[in-house]
Image 1 (cartoon, rainbow, N blue to C red):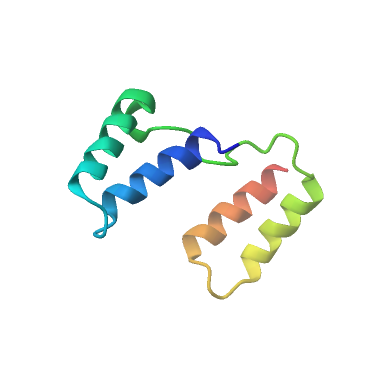
Image 2 (cartoon, one colour):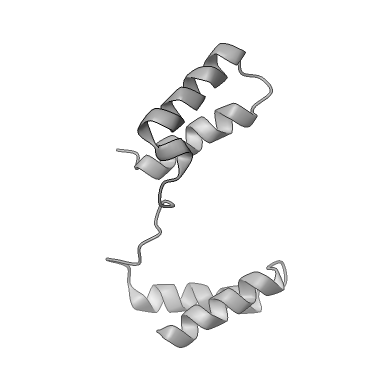
Length: 84
C-alpha cells in the first residue's frame, strides 16, 4: 500500500509531466489541495522508527565517502551520524 507521501509525489510528478493532459493535471492539483494539504506531507521514510541503527550508520558513512555527493549532503550525514 503506498504511503501518503508516495501518492502525493505521484500527483506532483503528474503536474510537471509535459506528456499529461491539462485535465489530468487539474485533477492532481485538486487532489493535492483537498487531500494532501497542497502536497505538504511528510517524506516517505522520514521517520527512523523501526530501522536498524547499524544500517543507518553504514549508509551515512557511505555518504561521507561518496565523491558524487554534495558537500551539503555530506555535512548533513555527518551531523546525523554524530547524533547517533
